[in-house]
Image (tube, rainbow, N blue to C red; front, top):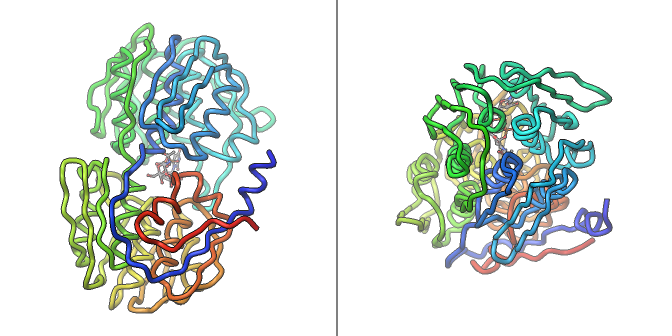
Length: 428
Ligand code: EPZ
């Protein structure tokens, strides 16, 4: 671990709660679209150019993995431009220390298999929110003709050739769908993927692959058809806005009783979260690429259940819970995607929330004035929910282990400060 990594591990956020958030916040490119797009560059021998790439730790980690594979990476973080030269990429090993930091490194399997017909990626472990198996990914690769075995912890995939086939996922998997599409675009013949994930990030990957010469139909639906082509070529692709970052700021503005506008965002990607906020009494006005939010009269209780797109995203569950601690009355939040995504509950209760876990749902008894305290971030989106709670709590909230936050939010505290939050990053 580099010294920088070590120091950032000790960073904490200190928040003086109570300031309403007002003003404008620019939404960055989507982390969960950028990661598969970076991996997809492997499929073209003359590389790929991406725009609107967010400067977050997960992107930096994946770029390190790309360099280990022989890619030449030029990331201009200030403009969001990323040039990937993949002419010298080889299917080298993706080691434990990279996969340990970011399990989305599994997204390298599909394109390595697609272009080289082999991949050596350390098997990803679970994480704070669940066991996160990749059995659906492996099953799809085997259906496409790959042999799979585990050797000293590495998933070794090899295929004499990749032949198009029909693939039916037992459960919706975002990166499983993305990995399968990337393994199939250079296959011999047609691949049909049924029960595919249709998140906007999957569609963004498919749009980019089409511009690279792939033949893909059914983009944005649950059934994706791919006609294999011999090669793909370079293109320039702009990453879609980050709907989860956007939803996080919407909930922070609403929880603070403020009045703010998000820019460079796609409201269509947030239809259900917007409907839920309106149901909670928040005023939301959408423009072509803006969303304005205000909640001058507080919020009231709402029940929500997470589900695959276009349902309420699991990645906004923790943030919505922090908001609902301010609602006068009882709300029920059900998590149906991950088996352990309530790590933030005990931390929110330390701030005075009254939350009770009941199986895969949480009962939120709202109307509590939160009191600042020392709390600990446990995973990316849980960290964001603690920030939202700290912004509304009275007194000082200190959030430890905010390296979780840095994985997926660019300049989080600076953007919040520009909205009027009293928040600073302190190194222990
Ligand atoms: C993606 O993870 C996102 N990550 C996650 O965002 C997001 O929470 C998740 O999709 C759901 O929307 C990226 O896109 C990089 P899944 P992914 O495969 O693809 C089970 C964030 O905060 N499953 O759709 O790993 C799995 O255990 C992150 O940015 C299998 O059982 O999620 C889970 O319960 C967190 N076998 C469910 O399916 C498999 O082979 C959905 O997982 C694959 C998944």
